[in-house]
Image 1 (cartoon, rainbow, N blue to C red):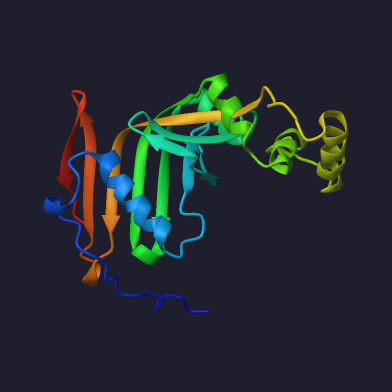
Image 2: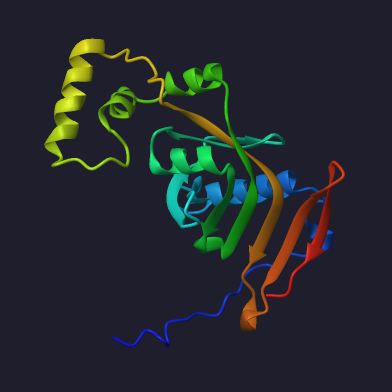
Length: 210
């Protein structure tokens, strides 16, 4: 199979300084709302990149559950590989890809856990199956077969019914960005890239070559 010829020319709208927000959260809000209105599946899906103590990077897809000026929030098992890596090195990167809009957003910053109260609030509005699943899965650990998960879920369901509490090792993280990049695909590979860097409590915006 020869995949060298697999390409398409991007025809996205221009991303100019004059028509973009002077601060990144406003720009992200605009692009995210546009992504929600397209046919994108899971527009809040994002790649999370972390680095282990051995310097080896790893990525996975997680779902953004909220964002504001304080950062971007996602939830997971604290004992998972990403949780352990964030414990050792709290610097991380996120990436959103919205192919229908020919757009990518890259975000870098420091990650901290959200408060237990914030984690409880989100956990309690999850579907009951998802809450049981948080208990049933020893995330990132080796298991002999899927039956282990099914059996664990049955035990938790029998114990807690439809009101399982939040496990102590499950909760939220907030990435506090110090760098954002907005990428818009353009024709002839002359893409638009605007970068926002935190400087003295504000944001400096510049343009990067594609």
